[in-house]
Length: 178
Image 1 (cartoon, rainbow, N blue to C red):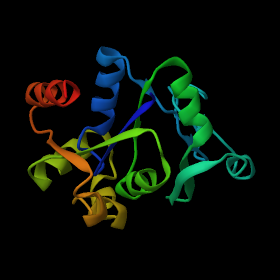
Image 2: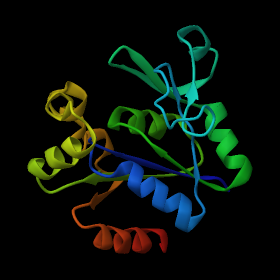
Image 3: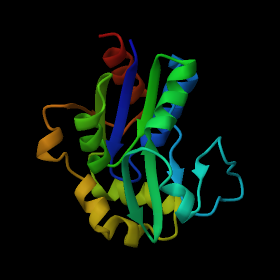
């Protein structure tokens, strides 16, 4: 049986850190997503993202996609199937809209973790550490939407408060032992 874990929450709550931890310590395979933005210095096509042009982007079978800051981001059935070729357990980071789309479209064993921090000041501090545009990012409609679990995901997602990493790892171990 194929399994998929969707990790969602606001920017800066630690979704990618948790995803990387699951890949390294639990054998999950990361589902690579597609984007039309340019690669950053350290990023490699096929390792970090599938970097696309606007015309090549729509040649894939997307389970969900969004446009953010004039760039397209999406996850495809092809990317999910590539992850499942090497592991029965796959993990993907999505926004809450993407998580809701997956809930409707994916027929595999699907789990969802909504990650949050207990204060907006903690979130702002984390964003400022990695992004000079932290205030604008936090003020965006997408960020504001993802600060709370949407009603359509309330009964679907496990909630994980990620204020303290050692405690978060204990919660992860407990959830994965079920």
